Length: 416
Image (cartoon, rainbow, N blue to C red; front, top):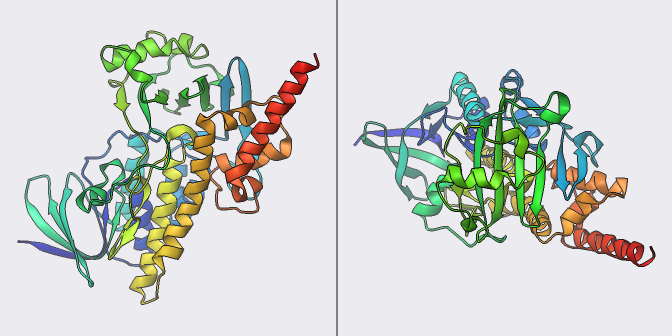
């Protein structure tokens, strides 16, 4: 059987895999990426957050993205019960990028892949990993290409950036219970022919329908818009019919956006994803590391997916480079502990969003500007900055501030 040898094999050519591949390629590491799909292909995760800009820049991928004129995202708007709250990334706590993009992921991922290939990365599309074998010295992957031919790929390390395909998690039985309650989603895209002019038609918006049900509006610079609902698993089944019929009925629930999207055709059949959250029992092992959604996914609400994907992809590549240079790496401390710190912060915010505490803080019409800046920094993805109290004390600070808001509201009601 045919056998190829590389330094690093990467499973998946999405943002995480592209960041890993591009970074390693900069240092002369021989990389091969195995991608199951043919690009361009559709993917969810169209709203980025500023932290991922640091990662694209360090991986040498920022310039090719800037050239695409994607819709700039400078913050986010939240709507609930007729009230509105806006967060501006330029008014966040601490240092960091003040903007990012809203992107059609089929185009975005294809741009990243093409830039990696331009740099010399070997990406094999329409191929999949069917089996793996790890020894102390190397890893051997069984690859089935688009012609249904099988060959072996030997590598010193494997980075699993396969996203929701979760290749190693399935092959090595690493699936684990998610750390947050499960939700489901339905989403699609439309040609946004009624889009308002100016900033109103450009900014990402979260329309809170119920405490655990929300609608997203993500406009792209190409004239299309991503729209979707996220809700508890037991909420969606009340709607019957095809995905298109279900989504059409649900659109009437968003008073803000129903007139804009009423009777518009979907660009593809709305997709339904149940049990969004994912987790694994371990993030690394002998000769392999899991990155991005192949390791863990929380929830779409704060657009953290691509940021964690690029953060983990970049860090995994850096640590593998160290090992290839003969340096000792403490994967538990340098990778697992670091990534879990950030995931823990966002996990708290997701939980507090759905139990209503964070919604009270975000939607408060008498927001303390200092608190708003600190929360904004978390929403921007700077969840490792422990100078921010809302990072350092995330386990209790959100609850405490929400409780103070409740006390203040009760005081006002009782003294009217």
